[in-house]
Length: 105
Picture (cartoon, rainbow, N blue to C red):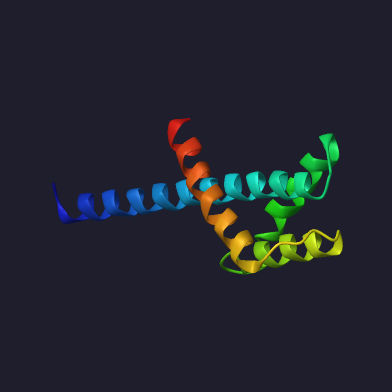
């Protein structure tokens, strides 16, 4: 295997890993949106629409703070009592669930 072949293989693996992480993040955000919708007593198509809003919120800046701010703000606006710690823990839990789901597809 030549150097250029190894370089191409590393680039392909990096691209694959990035695409996989993107899919995991999107899935986590959907799961988080559906969970938050339930907490706010939003059901059916409205819950699905809210989950899409949460997914879209992740494109505002690098990292997940934009998602955290959106969900926390919406929960507070609806009068749902939740601590920063509990929301961040839920985000971490759902990230693990999303990763498992994406890996088994």
